[in-house]
Image 1 (cartoon, helix red, strand yellow):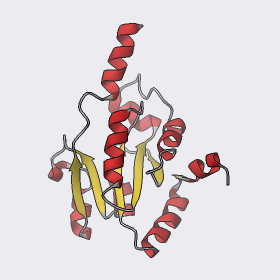
Image 2 (cartoon, helix red, strand yellow; image 1 turned 90 degrees about the vertical axis):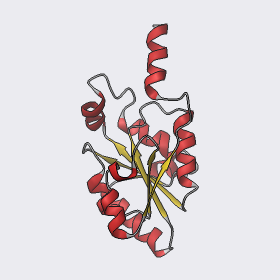
Image 3 (cartoon, helix red, strand yellow; image 1 turned 180 degrees about the horizontal axis):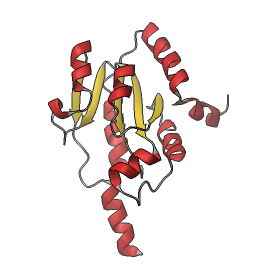
Length: 164
């Protein structure tokens, strides 16, 4: 398997997600789930995702589709198309799987995955995190991670607009 094939194999569809979940569960792996748009990958994302991975054995990322990002962020977004964003994330050594979702929230995806740990940024209150009820019902953990200060997609876009 080439490096690119390995990266592509980490971008999952519904069928491969369920197969991979069965394998991870059989191997008694602790599954960490987070989600986001990850439109322009930056150091803040890398810091956040690496800290999420440190919480368990498997890091699974729910990635908003282009349509979902557009509904959430506006007509000028995303900047980077969904398949490219998925490949960028999958190419990170500490990411084990990326799954696209088209809804505005990952609620149904979280319900299907039932991760051991649900991670979001510390700008969320634990009780307000989408899927928190599912995690509480299944006995999992909800953990928030501080963002690396000074890094955001919005700030990068603002810098680009000033130059152009």
